[in-house]
Figure 1 (cartoon, rainbow, N blue to C red):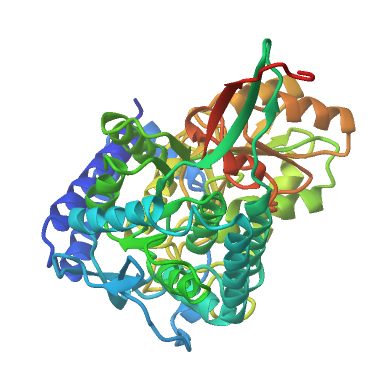
Figure 2 (cartoon, rainbow, N blue to C red):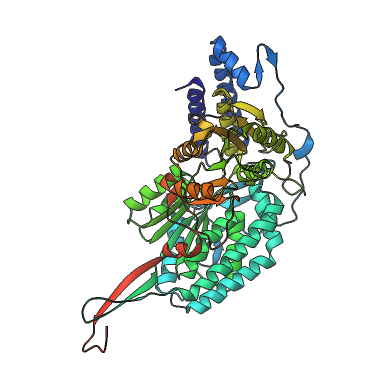
Length: 578
């Protein structure tokens, strides 16, 4: 293990310990938490410098990786830390809903506790939200159970369920400006992205699943002998759903849409970082006519509320989107309880392959989008940019210039392309990986530090000379860090692209149809985008190979997650035909 890798894991363990210790104190001081995190970061920097300086060749290598060496200094392209993110716009949106939604009513947590949700632009508290715990999950599951076993939703005609889903989509569209502002405020994504991309996608998804509600049916099956055989597709029951913080509204739609279309009831746990928009749209669902208890929303932490939902004996199905490590825990809890089926959409380290025939200017722009979209906080981000050696130098120079032009700032401001990372933990994680890249002797071409003096803004960062064994090429960074790798031929890049524990997505940029056909079949990934990236139509299934998950979301495939198939066999006397 290299010194850089050792320091990386030491720092990661130390910061995890601080998070655990501070979270155990319900009334922890935010200022004390941040102070401890920054002190740990400084300690690890000093340790790293000490180790490097103890070996002159190691120090020279580190300086060289920074673009400097004892024989001559080269300036690193860095971003100005001036006031681009200092003057923040106050969003014109009110916080309406901060309680848990259980059985159609907004209620305080059973314990009476709340937790703060933050503005990632400044680290300041937006609101205090009810902190759901085991008892709140129990109450929500009880309400969902009753709504399924006794309530009208699964017994309602599929057409009426469809009409409620459509009315809900119309209400969301009516409140789209308010929801986009709330999503930006709580998450840090740009307002333009939330308003022009994600809210229309949300509405489209519910229109799509409303259309499926009355088209779910079984089959008549031919069988040997005098028997009539049919299959029934029935709702699975109470669905537990846990959504992440990077796309709060979109993930709500991916989970809730198909589950309701199939006639299930739901207990949904939001990410503790971003609870506000899910509570808002759940209220709109009830305005659209959704019966009480069909959709319950609990906000809380993963180790408490999330674990209680995953291990609940009266939950019939579980769906989770998040990190691979947490996905393992969720799967284990589900298995140890009532062996409920689980769908998982987990991490990724997606290759984006630029072939030698590529239009370099277009490839640069698409690769930039594939990595930096949503502040790099995207599970399928094209975070390993493989570039053919014939176009590598040109691609690298243009990619660096594109990153330097990227506008980082208040996501409410027009023209801003990149907002802050979601919170201090993610912010620190990204900076640790950047330091790991430097210490592993990748070349830092631009960026590499925070931007501004408040909030969680990270400079768009580009590394060249990245090798497959470096942490920045292996681990999911979930931030604005582009790693550019060089390859010689198709066989080599296939082998290297597939040599990962992940398999969520991949991108290919080429003019050659044969090359595209070869790569789309050879890459072990759930989605392969050819000359495009991040296309998320409602009908396109999404999910991963290997440790990127189990099952698929969106499209017809997601309906399978929320249905049981029952075979019904009955004898037929004197059949006219079989």
